[in-house]
Length: 135
Image (tube, rainbow, N blue to C red; front, side):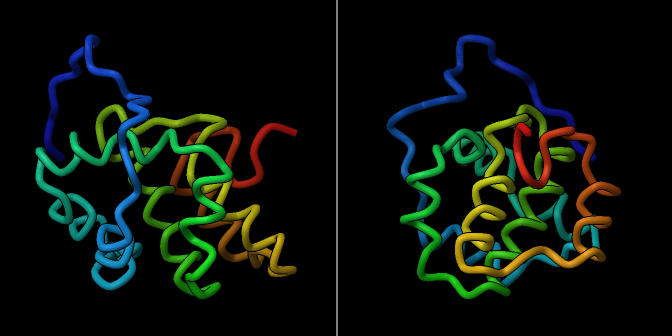
């Protein structure tokens, strides 16, 4: 596990950040949610800093950005962001987590998370809002 330096002057909710489809495709194709080593080596420190604002993107943006992904691809993204929030410094998103928005997008498609995945999310993250958001 690497240690990053937190810069309090950095704006984690940077409105200029745009979700890159290529970045999401990279996650879908290369991440192995069962191998934490793959997560630790997946992004460089610079990439972690660049993509940190992705954690605070709003629901509407996630819905429009991820609408073209398959259910299986959304589940992979859910797994990645579940792990990223715990393992990348300053990627905590609480009630604004992409996991919540991607889970809601699946629900909108009439697809729910199976019990095994729900258990996996709870076992791999301590964000009390995951995966459904504030109740």
